[in-house]
Length: 270
Image (tube, rainbow, N blue to C red; front, side, top):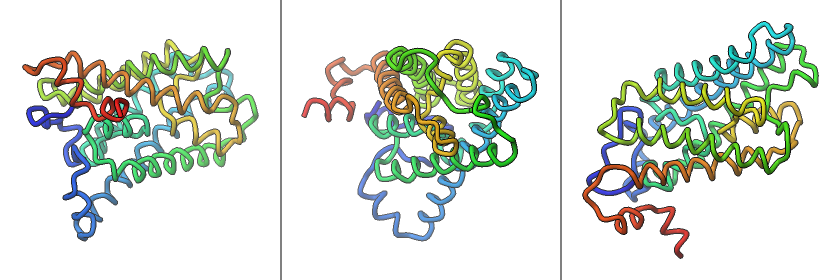
């Protein structure tokens, strides 16, 4: 996804940066840059906080109040809250809200590496705060756990998480990193993808697609069963999804040069 002709990323990624250049490191010392990165991190905290509060809250309310929201309602809630937060703060932080997405953007030179730990910390903080809020507001029973636990085997859950995370990142790559796409529709496309994935995978894995989404509730509620699935699966899936879109992206470069442009492939070949 790198290359001088492809450095134009969509409005969704404006201000986030496309590479971990030395200039980024030098600018970090300036007060303006400190304010800017702080704003991005706050945006990520707020974004994932409300994603967990609304999405996880729909799960809690449905379990505590006799299925009042229903499973389709839960699916729609997850899709809507992601869409809303992308449109709310996506222009500030890039609207990642997901460590797997952040890592993938960095590997494909769409995001500076030095910001990755900061973003992941912000995302985990927002998830834990959102999970903590739900735990304080509701009198939760063990059955009302709003995190993600495999319904079947860990292996089955891992495969499903890889597939749905692949789809999510494939869509994100198409609408948020290709300058031919209609950037204004990125939030809708991503939100709809989340909703569809929850419809399909929700009953089996909880349809995480996001390590932060799973880690926050697990830490707050002390439920760690199969947690590794929701860390490994989304990372593998998002990297594969971005790589797949990179292969089909229109370009006049030969295939060999496209594959060499990927920092992920470079690291593998070493």
